[in-house]
Amino acid sequence: MVEGEFVVPGDEVGVIEEFVPAAGTYARDGFVRAKAVGFVRVDALKHEASVAQAREVPLPRLGDVVHAVVTGLRDSVVYLDVFYNETRNAHYAVPFRAILHISEASNERLRSTYEVFGYGDVVRATVISRKPPYMLSTRGPEYGLILARCPRCMAPLRKRGLWLYCPSCRKTFKRRKIASRHYLLR
Ligand SMILES: [Zn+2]
Image (tube, rainbow, N blue to C red):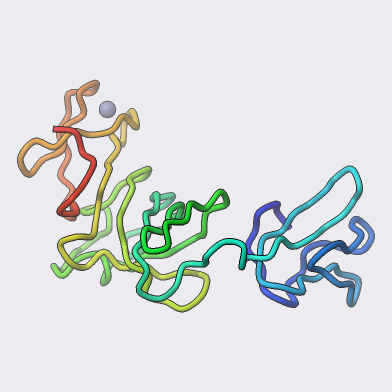
């Protein structure tokens, strides 16, 4: 188990040979398991595994507006880390993993997610599932990119009409789903 990983009751947090069950955990079948919904905490020195209860942090809920950074792309899915919940004004020190399917990216029909988002981009989205792994949607004009990065140098892109421009690479990029309010520099 990794420090900060999200767990639900019964999930394996560690093995008994390596860890002593601490707060929020119990031992069964050779494993330290989560007793609560929360995040794994590992104390390597004391060999303690515990679960910090999630209720200290307001979890994303169905319909919440969140901000997430793109961590990976396939043609039909985008992988993201949710780091801020706008609805509940909560910052997540340990981000929540989320998935955005191409059909939820835009009201337009898209061939590939690469047409709309790029690695390192920040999107404003709504949560459309009840629990992890969170499913997101950027349908609607208020949702989509709020910050885009250059795929070559990762510098924030500037908006130039319908195009995005990297001042250091002097290249333009097309991204089709920019939120109505964004932080793209002009
Ligand atoms: Zn660049």
